[in-house]
Structure formats: C-alpha cells, structure tokens
Image 1 (cartoon, rainbow, N blue to C red):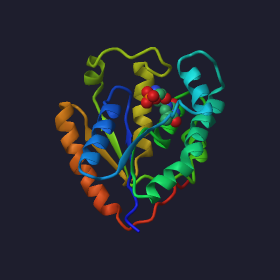
Image 2: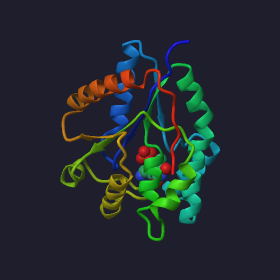
Image 3: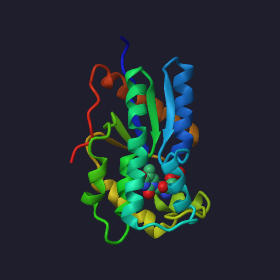
Length: 208
Ligand code: NYM
C-alpha cells in the first residue's frame, strides 16, 4: 500500500486568486508524478449544488439557515469520494471548504459561528488550510465583483474577520499580493512540506 493523498484547502475572500492557484498546483503536481485532483465547494454539479447555484445567482430565495445546511450537505454528499480518493493516494486540492461555509453564513445577521460550525463536525480535516490573503485596496483593483450574492465589500470584510476567528494551527496565511507565478512557486514549496508531513498520519475529522 502506498501513502495516502494530502487534503489541502484553499480559503480566502472572493477575488484572491484561489481557483487559478488551485488549478496551477494540480497541474504542477501531476507533471511531477504526484497524483492530485482539483475539487471545489460549492460543487454546483450535484442536485444539492444546483439549488445552491440558483440561490447564489439570485434565481431563488432561501432562509439563511436552510441554505447554510445545503452548503454543508454539499460537502457531506462528497465526503465518501474525498475519503476514497485520499485513501487511494490522490491528493485533493480543494477550492473552499467548511471554513467558507462558516465564514460566509456567519457574516449574516442572526447567524453565529458556533451554530454554523455544527454541521461541519465529522468531515475530514484538511492537512493544511492556505488562506490567500489580499488587502482590500488590492482586491478592489482586481476588477469589480460579479453579480452573485455576497460579492459586496462590506460583506467580504465580515467574512475576513470570521476567517480569522476560525484559524487553527493548520492554517497558513499567504500574502496573495504578488504575481501569479511567484505565488504559485510559494504555494508549491508550501505543498512539499505539507505533503511530507502528512505521510503516515491518519486523516482526522473536524471537531467542535
Ligand atoms: N460559499 C461557499 C458559502 O457561502 N458557503 C460555502 O459553504 C461555500 C463553500 O459561495 N461567494 C460562498 C462563497 C462564494 C460563493 O463560491 C461561491 P465560488 O468559489 O465563487 O464558486
């Protein structure tokens, strides 16, 4: 039996460059013969993901708590796949995870961090969470937000402060204010350390 894959999560406010960096990392790892795959949450391709997508694009309205549980259910429906892939040696580079779930929902009025965290308990815990951090002055220069729900500056500020409340020793803050290639190189070397350190360690689960 070979080693398990590593579970690496990228988090950050909208426009920090997460998707670009996740995909570049997967390509670079595959070129180096390290099996790795990209995953993203919300995964809009599933039945639950389709409802989430309709909510984000404002086609439907849903109560805050209901949509929060759908985002969480979207992770739970993919949990068996995550476990199987990791066990078979594939590393997963995940574009948003439970931390986005909590940081975004808890930025809404009447939603608290603890309530939001509860449905995440028991999901596989990542080996590392890389938070791509970008100052607001810089992110606002990267072009306007799109049309989706949550893509407004005030809301993103609350999301950022929620991320900081969720921080554990697994988190690494990465300054994303650099060229795409420089950021990629930094992430690649961070990955190497995480990959080495995760060897032989069983996957833990998210706890209270
Ligand atoms: N989002 C993402 C949540 O509100 N809860 C979650 O659990 C997750 C994973 O969805 N603004 C929000 C953050 C984003 C939005 O994500 C869509 P993306 O990565 O832009 O497709």
